[in-house]
Image 1 (cartoon, rainbow, N blue to C red):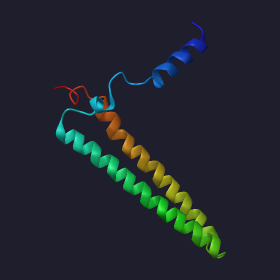
Image 2: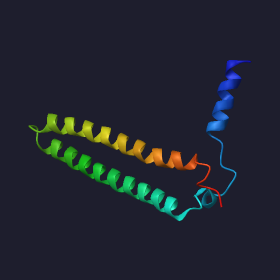
Image 3: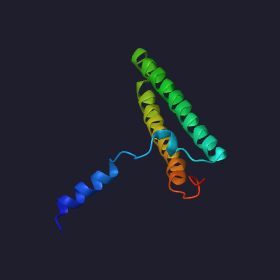
Image 4: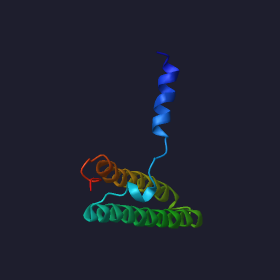
Length: 105
């Protein structure tokens, strides 16, 4: 077996499009669907707040030279929290999509 064919096989599986329409990918259970909607909305709000704080810090650092180092340090923390928030949003989506009972009728 050639290593290139294995790699291309995994890429084909990774980037394949679902055979179902998007609305059929939602779970049939109302509580699970509401949980997923809550997670997605929470992630959007948290990332928007973190983006707003980042842009305010950047504007503050451009106007004031004394707080430039502190603003740079806080922006790194914000980037770490944004990455953690996106991972936090991915886990429930992945767990529920891989649960066989979530999509049963």
